[in-house]
Amino acid sequence: MNKNFKEWGIEKNDLHENKVRAFFHEREVWFASIGVNIGFEQDGRGDKFLRPAIILKKFNNEVLWCIPLTKNQKKGKYYFSFKLNDGVSTAILSQIRLIDSKRLQYKIGDLTEEDFTQIKEKLKQFLA
Image (cartoon, rainbow, N blue to C red; front, side):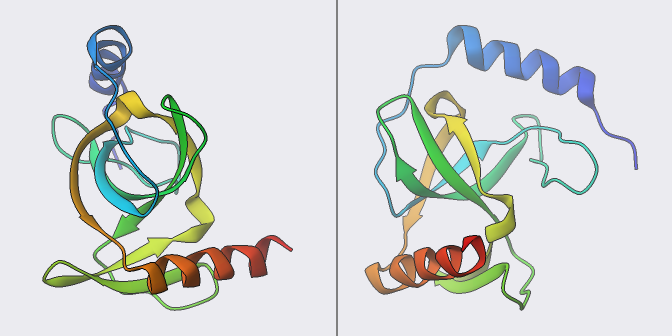
């Protein structure tokens, strides 16, 4: 699998130098510039290297924990599927990561409070 690390490096530098931080809240789902990553880490797609992600924890206006999403329905203790807009998405709980809010591009929805609580409970279970 060929990965375009060079183009991601250019985009990442542009985000760092020029992007204005987004205003965001926990429980929201955003397309974020996740980038090109190594091995089995989830990659973003397209020219902005985007991937949908849940805002799990807002530490301040600059950094947050997010959980990348996939359209593929997966089962197991490291996944949580839920309805989002008109479809089903699956949170990849094992890929939780800290990101800068400059990576957030645009909001696509909100999780229900019930789904958000269930995701946090599943995370607690496998982290304990």
